[in-house]
Image (spheres, rainbow, N blue to C red):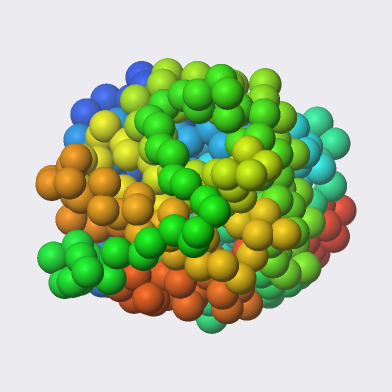
Length: 347
Ligand SMILES: CC(C)(COP(=O)(O)OP(=O)(O)OC[C@H]1O[C@@H](n2cnc3c(N)ncnc32)[C@H](O)[C@@H]1OP(=O)(O)O)[C@@H](O)C(=O)NCCC(=O)NCCS
């Protein structure tokens, strides 16, 4: 590292950060770091107001496992940040790391110093793969990661549906003969629970590039755990399914999450059509029905966003047909933990 870089870093202190006990000034500094990075990578995306941001970092989503945070400070002020998530269940072999440095402070070794500082905690329990998710394709984050030995294992598109810009007639998608739609919020009806879990497991064959991330193997117990987790976090989990009348099987599933802290938007999560029911327009039917009901029940929602693997042509086509617009290509990048430790040592 050049002398100007090491002297720039000498004044920097890296340490853990706990949003639940942080002062208002620290939360505002952390918000400023996030805002600077988001504005650069996603200029088209509205920033959440400070209060929403604070609510979100105090209760991060658990689907990636428990999250710990670190910050870099200069003269006591937060100037950059990192987080580590440790997935549970299927994904105990990997650790998800996120490092953010505002554009005006880049290329001075800060990002690398943060990664070096969090790595021991990230791999302490034997995780063998370090992953970055939500890394914008070909932007600074991916280029930085590549220099440290990470490789892109998945590309996915971020798609936005701006309710005001879309003709709701696009969502009128009748369900195929022989199927009926059912919907619920928060808890699957007992009569459909087992079939619902089975249908969700069909996600296991969704495209996932070269990534080592494993999709969840859903069981009725897992469904109930997930529902309880959403309730505990003020997340309204809305589901629409298509049921095959003759067999009673759940043929298609789609779910949307609404966060109490983000009343203006909805996240379109998993959509699955079980393998033997594909090609009948069921994906379009459940997603269209979801949008019709969502906009009727929640007029305050202006935006629905979703992520889909870039090579999942069917789902991308369905989303376009419903009015979604692709706004960015994002990636997963992954590297072996030992390889990364070696690279960092050599720097
Ligand atoms: C990724 C990020 C944290 C890097 O922060 P940083 O402080 O600039 O990183 P460093 O100074 O430690 O970079 C070290 C090396 O990485 C490489 N690198 C960093 N940014 C790069 C870029 N935009 N293009 C090419 N190489 C780059 C270079 O080899 C650099 O060394 P050099 O400056 O001597 O050439 C910052 O760009 C960022 O916040 N990006 C947006 C968020 C993100 O995508 N994070 C990564 C996902 S986990």
